[in-house]
Image (cartoon, rainbow, N blue to C red):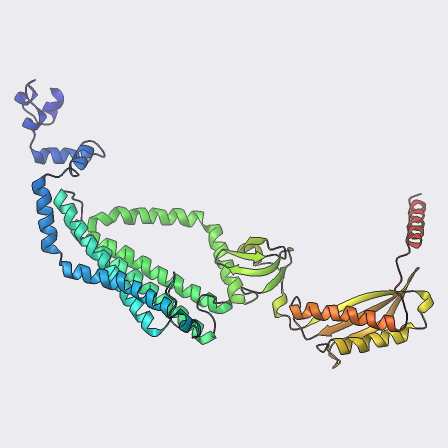
Length: 438
């Protein structure tokens, strides 16, 4: 009784035969429930799902009044049936389209096989119709929510806010695709495979477009949703602070990725060697990490912050290559060796047309060292071939065959490692070490 009296209820309302509904008006009940979380809201929410036949009829009438079915069917046909017809037409003429060069606006996320200007225009029109169809469905959803009694702040502005955000996202996506097409056309590259500094420009413009999109979303929510946006904006502010504190490492990787791309030291498709031992072909040069495929086909993912300070050797950008061999000859053939070495040079010239002979690079075949069991000779030649290319490996093989051919002409054999001499040398070395320790 005291609790009821505290709410301003008279004594008659506290009688045993009185109910709360008789003592409080609907406005009073709404006032008490306004600051609750679940109390009294679950039953009310579930009750909205069980509609009376009369209310259901009113909802259908409202939809029929608001919706122009001809417009809805038009957007459906233009947005979903037109792309289907274009795909069928493209498949029927696939042989003809394969012979045409790939040049058109390539949309992010896929598209048809026909990249003609007509297909691009029709595809964009179809996407606009699809968005209009979805916006129409959101309008219908708003009518249904009003009909079943679901009410929340700024409910009337929901379709308008959704339409603004959806169309802005589509426009930014089209601008991004157009930008990628222009960059590819200017650099004569594939729009889906931009490399080097062109890829950096592409990413920076995309980041700028994402910022514009985020600004439009926040501005639309604040203006169109009104009071309902306060929680969203507050949550976004707190989230920004938390993310900013937790993403310092991510920011470092991001800037290191931008540095790698802007420095033009490496690009997708290059074969590189880093000073930390990582080597292979660059498969992906991302914002945060770089993917490298090793010679054993194993993919290595390396954070960009670990690569930014590394010394890198880009083997794909080296215009020349070298082949060096150390030969071992017997002392019994020492008189033949000058002629053998000269013949080796002649055979290499015949077998390898890419060898450098203008004097700008070494082309040598000389004796170098007297050893216990053999005479050492060094072969050093350079080629106008990129290292690790198929032509380089074929040329190196030709060098080895040319050496073998020249040696065979003079009936000279290579010296085999003398195990006895090596063993004696090791014993002598071991004795000297013991004397030093003593």
